[in-house]
Structure formats: C-alpha cells, structure tokens
Amino acid sequence: MTDMHPAIRVSEIFGPTIQGEGVLIGLPTVFIRTGGCDYRCSWCDSLHAVDNQYRNEWLPMPIDAVWQTVHALSGGRPVMVSLSGGNPAIQPFGPLIERGHRQGYRFALETQGSVVREWFADLDVLILSPKPPSSEMTTSWAAFEACLEAAQEKPQIVLKLVVFDESDYAYAKEVAARYPHLPIYLQPGNHTPPHPGSEDTSVDLDGIMMRMEWLVERVTSDRWFEARVLPQLHVLLWGNKRAV
Ligand SMILES: C[S@@+](CC[C@H](N)C(=O)[O-])C[C@H]1O[C@@H](n2cnc3c(N)ncnc32)[C@H](O)[C@@H]1O
Ligand SMILES: Nc1nc2[nH]cc(C(=O)O)c2c(=O)[nH]1
Ligand code: SF4
Ligand SMILES: [Mg+2]
Image (cartoon, rainbow, N blue to C red; front, top):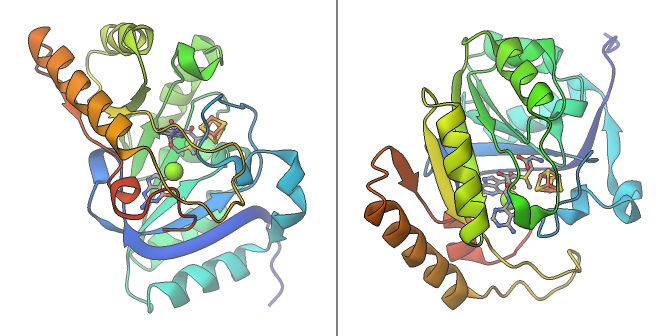
C-alpha cells in the first residue's frame, strides 16, 4: 500500500534510551528528531537538527517508514515516543500519532510553542519549553497560548525551562506566574560546543553541577515549592554524544 500522507523531515530516530529531561525523566523512550527549526537558540544542543548546514542530513521519510523504524527499535512493544527536533511542530505528525495509538504507543511532543497544530490535542504529553533571555529568542505569547488552546487540555501539559543565569530564572518565574496551573520543570543550561558534528562529546560537568546547585538554592530560598529542578540525565551519562 502506498503512503498517502505527507512525509516527515527526519534528522535521526534513536532509542530506546531513557528520557533524560523533565516530567518523563527515566522512562524508556524512542526519539524522533525532526530537521528544521523556526528558532535558533544561542545555546541549542541540537544544532545538527537546526542549522541549514545539516539540511542534507534531514531526509523526508514517509509515515510508513518512520513507523517501521519506531516499531523495529521497540521490538514491537509499545513505548513512549518523544517527538523532538528542531521544532517537531513544523512536521505533519497527526497520522503517525493515530497509527501508533492504535498499537498502544504513546507520544510526547517537545516544542518551544511558536507553531500550533490541531494534532496537539491527540498527544499524550505536551512539553512546552518557552525560551529565556539567554537564548536570544523572543517568545510570542499569542502563539504560545494558541498551542495551549489547540491542546484542549487533552494531553498532560507541562512547562520545561532552561536556566543559565539570574535573568533566565526571573523569566521562569514570570512564566510560572502566567500559567500557575501548569507543572514547571527547571533544568540547568549546558554550554554546548559550536560544532555539533565534532567527535568531542565532553561537557562542562562542573559548570552544570554548579548551576544545578545554584538553581536548587534559588528555588528553595524563594520558597518556590511548586517548581521541580532536574539535570539533563543523558548529559550527565553521555555528555554531548548524539542520539542517546
Ligand atoms: C533541542 S530542543 C528540541 C525541541 C524544541 N525545539 C524545544 O526547544 O523545545 C529539546 C529541549 O532541549 C532543551 N535544550 C536545548 N539546548 C539546551 C542546552 N544547551 N542546555 C539545556 N537544555 C537545552 C530545549 O530547551 C528543549 O527543552
Ligand atoms: N535521552 C535523551 N533525553 C532527551 N530529552 C530531550 C531530548 C531532546 O533533545 O529533545 C533528549 C535526548 O536527546 N536524549
Ligand atoms: S527551539 Fe529547540 S531546537 Fe530550536 S534552536 Fe531552540 S533549543 Fe534548538
Ligand atoms: Mg537534547
């Protein structure tokens, strides 16, 4: 049977590994990393899925092929599938989600909240990650709110904020005040090397741990008892290695 649905632009599909961040941390997960992003955060850790320099590596894959890859990686056993990127909201994921759901798979989407899709309502988990000042991006709250509306409170919705410094922390508090009903996860920023293809996967672990400790101190001294602070577990385990 031919695949009538539009193709998905894929940078890499990998796993199962553990989800390293946020509300699903520790959960075995297969990742679909799409190519292309409408943002370019100063510290993006996935530039190989953002920078046009790598676009020849982003292959348009029919839904059938994407599904077969996920199915093979998971040995046919239903698993959590994380849609990331790049901005995965740019891609036509509706039919894949429908297909996976029929076989018991679950879907989480990671997005900055700049592009809205009707299929957000079909997700199991929507992770919205608006970008703080250190990213050098500007949040459109109109677009962000359109994403929340599209989800129609059907998926579990959570916020995930990267924090490098005091102004990022202030931004995270503003976001929390704006959406007091949404659980919020804070993660210390990781200074990534400028060349994503490089063999050097080392990270500044001391810096990450220092920011992690500083964040814990900040949150507790503010009596911000609703916030959750987590490191990127996969970065602690595997550094800046790709596809883990
Ligand atoms: C690479 S992005 C892809 C999905 C989507 N574009 C987004 O930003 O939500 C996945 C997650 O990694 C986070 N992230 C990216 N670079 C990071 C870094 N250097 N340190 C910590 N988190 C980072 C993003 O904020 C986002 O929550
Ligand atoms: N293990 C693991 N956990 C992750 N959580 C978010 C990731 C991402 O890059 O979207 C990611 C990733 O690339 N690997
Ligand atoms: S929005 Fe996400 S993928 Fe795009 S540049 Fe920022 S961190 Fe990277
Ligand atoms: Mg990542």
